[in-house]
Image (cartoon, rainbow, N blue to C red; front, side, top):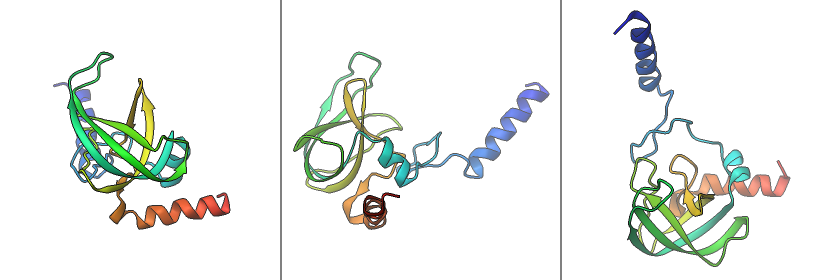
Length: 146
């Protein structure tokens, strides 16, 4: 390893160890960090509270998708967008996975990617039981416009 490579590697190690990259609760790496609630809300296709009704494993698909889990979610309360009353959310088996449990409610920030509807594990989606502060933030800027 030359001197330049050593400096780059030391910088990368320092960045990771200092928290320059952040990790969600499941330990996966978030190269772009965590978006603010406001930013993720504005950039999401839909934001809603929903309860997982079922899940099923899906095989590898075209377009370079990995295999994963398809969750069927019943939409209960919509904050942004116009999702259907029931929606399938895909989570690939990778470090980007957003794993959910059946019969549990979540606050979900959802996007469309290559024909699939997905949740960013580095974002603000979470169990509804742990979402009070995020919900307060959403309601505040919905009410004030800021």
